Length: 273
Picture: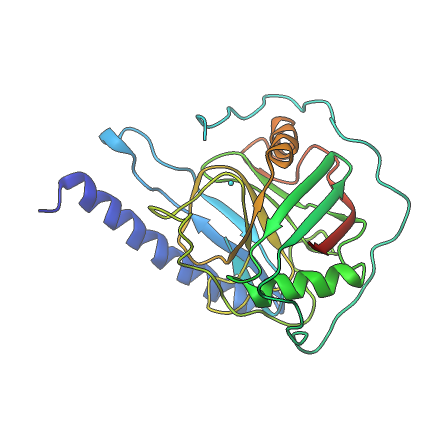
């Protein structure tokens, strides 16, 4: 028998889906490059006294939208000191391609990704066998220097807890010119519509198969629909870096905006073990 609390949660999820569809349609009409990832809206918690806060993220491509465990952090009342270093010298490359690169990675091999950022190194074990198109794309783009010198443009500290990166424009609407298929949406780590801390996943439009180059790094358990390709696991030291970034807060003071920390990917590399 469905309890009253379960029914309320179901209604909240249905409301979320309706709002997401309306927002996606509106953005598609008003922007030539739609760039918002799915919003997390009112999921009522036990007792009905509180709810998850709404969080929207920008993604990439012509049709791009998407949507990281302790208690939620309080939003800072004043801007915290920047805990990160100055970016390395260099310029962002403006590169696009007409179609997804052919899959050439060894699906049976182990691949790792290193994000050498101004805030510290973030090491990630990639899931090549479960998400070969996604891992292959990162291997390809990293080899072209696509991510080097790019800013991580969005941080959420309320409702969902992620840092979003991968857009060379740092505006939320950049991408490589091609889209990727959804993969690994039934990963065993995704339980109860929760992307656990330590997950790295793709942003998309809320529509199927619309990932590009933008991705989000989950630093605290976050409830999201299982619609965003999880393609790797962040190391413990990488999570420490992410929490340092989150601790500095974001620009709006509302839990969703540009990070106050100067988060720049000096170099992103993918390595076959």
